[in-house]
Image (cartoon, rainbow, N blue to C red; front, side):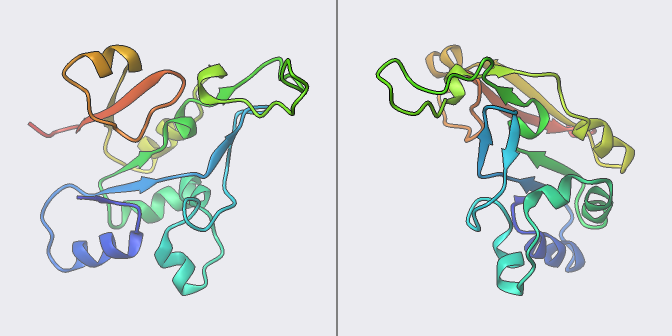
Length: 167
């Protein structure tokens, strides 16, 4: 079971759900100048149940050691957005496009950076190891993996293969 809403996952765990639970973690966008994930929009930047409860935190609160420890109380693992694991950055970042319009950048123009500490921090917090498979997006679309995983970034698709211990 996976969800972006911690409230629903907590409810299901306390009511006897006996399966692996994954807390999904999203972000709004990427600042291609710095590689930082942007959290500033209530639809994509935080769980809706936090919004309803008046909780002002963004999803990045889940990525801290304290947030990961809280997730461990109800979930077996996390399902972060790829840029939270492998940042994307455009360098040098031009100020304008060739036609003079402001340059915004895109995922296709960005290069991957060194991985963040997120996976190591999640393991320290006792989270199950999520096995990711990064595959070339073009090859995935031409092959059997033609579904939109929702996790495309940097020309690659990310598929969560399984939680460690699953068969």
